[in-house]
Length: 419
Image (tube, rainbow, N blue to C red):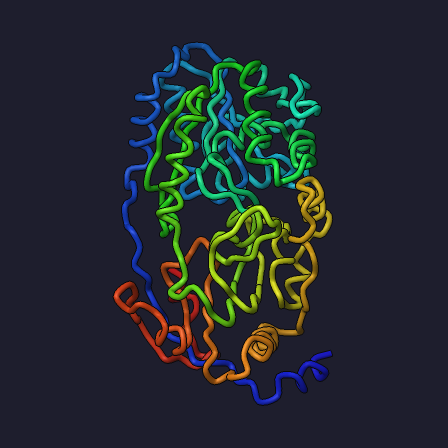
């Protein structure tokens, strides 16, 4: 097979690369524990003495999520409450209790680490109807005395609305567990801007007192803002947090280029493995934005994704090793629940990283020597990137610092620039 590809990449050399640091808004919270306590104290939660408090945590790789969860547990305990952790991730983790607890563990959220038990049952109750469909709600969550959901507010990867990824979505989909996620997604992503709030409203009418700890990250994957909201203020407050999140999102040094090489994709990076709000590669027609890239190459999965290869379908090329690392059953469960299969289509797989990149260059441009190529660790990590001279020539150099290069492709000190 390798020999067959050779005739298509004959004469294509891997380009020299420059190490570049981008400059973004550096606003960030240093004292995570202190700010969690301050935000919760300002949130005017009711008295917690003796109450069972369910703390909902999802599957995304939110910055310092383990510290945020632990600090939340400690604050609840300091108020006399009895906290427990609820996995709130729809169908992720293969749609099983063990799988979802494993996903939390990969994010550093364990019973020992946060100091609270994890109740991972996927049992749900039907608590009403919306859009002619049953609305499911976690049985464990319903039995708590108070619910506190923790989530990052950010643009969704598949639709646009005033509330996209955030607190409302975690209530409707995360706490709906696998059945709730499947039902809601089955109505179509084109309706999600309406269905997610409506499902959440049904749940909140029967749920225990519900509050949300909203987190907004900066371009350096650090928490820049946190705010506690009561459930009845989600509709009013989340839209402005979403606007702020969009303002703080990272971008590439240039908006249009030939080849993007992504070292790792995974559910801890984005619901779509690599964030289409960054790459411009969307699985649905209901969202837009991001870069204009001719060819995308994926070279690996994150450890935290546990073999979930959702997002590989948005690449043009990958490697046989990446295919071998994907747990297709877990991947299929996630994609089929979301009713979006574009993300799991199989791109062309080559025997090695080098061959995949060389073929991408061949397919993207008639002038390989002038290729505009950007290599990143993942789409959460754009502060440090590796680029070709063509990118430097087209970039606004007032927003970047060149830290080294040119390096030959095989000599580029990758890991030292991924810190």
